[in-house]
Image (cartoon, rainbow, N blue to C red):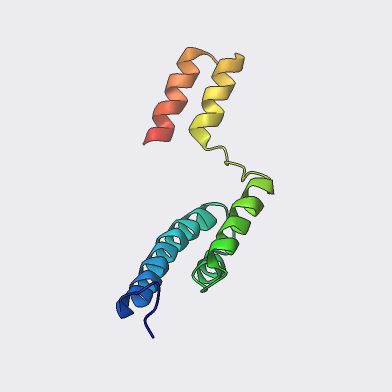
Length: 104
């Protein structure tokens, strides 16, 4: 009997491969972002490439990422020096001298 919707036999395989490649690309970006957020990057990578549920887990990752508290950026010495100068705790000469010492 003739099917109403004839398909090429490789269409299913091709669609599956394209979907998996898209999941790999998404997983790569999730991995990079999870590393920056101090989350378990390898675990999230594996979860996102899982067939059938990977896209849902990628959405879950984005939700968790947005709900979490942002990672605090640690003050580096030059930033602390700039803040002290801006508050007027040190003079311009002290600022320049300490900045030169930090840059060496």
